Length: 184
Figure 1: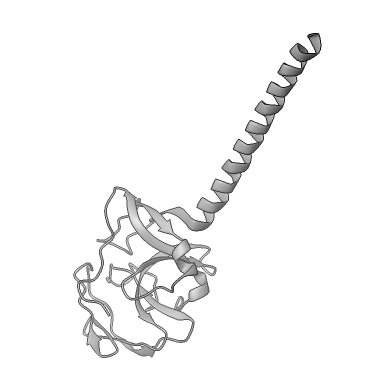
Figure 2: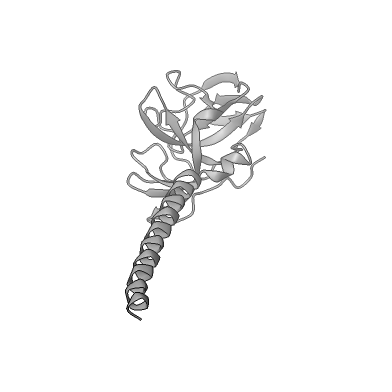
């Protein structure tokens, strides 16, 4: 009888230890999955005004990058190696597109973009053809000097491999991110 009584606490201890091990493993797995599928990023600066304000916290969707490439109107988070930090921009051109800015109006493949979510006026830009494996991105704030984007030769077109994820929603303050009314 004494053997049975002394065996119960050891079994209970083993059960508790395995319970904690399972908990830690599941927590680690959840962390890995969340870190590789979604993420949080903070907007810093005015380049995406009025759609996003400095200080907004964004939920980032990383998993969609495994199934598709960014398309027109998507707001993406880009890891910019030369700058040393991430930037948030809107995709207006994909591989093979012809992008032109004339009189402050952006044309893609000869069609004027319907952009009600922007402020300011873009500087004119000679027509560029978006290279394979690249995107042409701009900030929603088109005033000169407010957005470091593909219009700036120091950044230029962005490589697809540098896209960290899609800006899915603003969590703080909570709101959807503006999309174009008419887009390809």
